[in-house]
Length: 92
Image 1 (cartoon, helix red, strand yellow):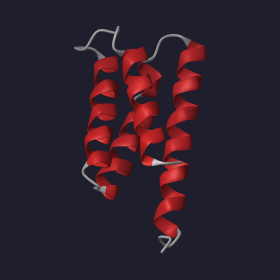
Image 2 (cartoon, helix red, strand yellow):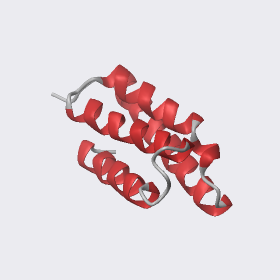
Image 3 (tube, one colour):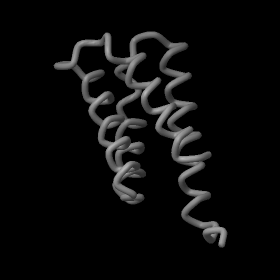
């Protein structure tokens, strides 16, 4: 997954969750997603993965089951793509 694709997915997730109360636990997942976006743009791989893991740990705050499953799958996909990128050598 390219950086642009990952950014697009993070933006879509943030937008879909932004209607929830920012003071509650769903506000926390949005903050983790924003931190992941910032880390991705800053090429801080460790912080990016950490923020995604933190967001994944906060998924239970999403009240709608289908949305919770969709967000969980997307975060797992982003983490999986990130793990593959860190293992594979850069193309020259």
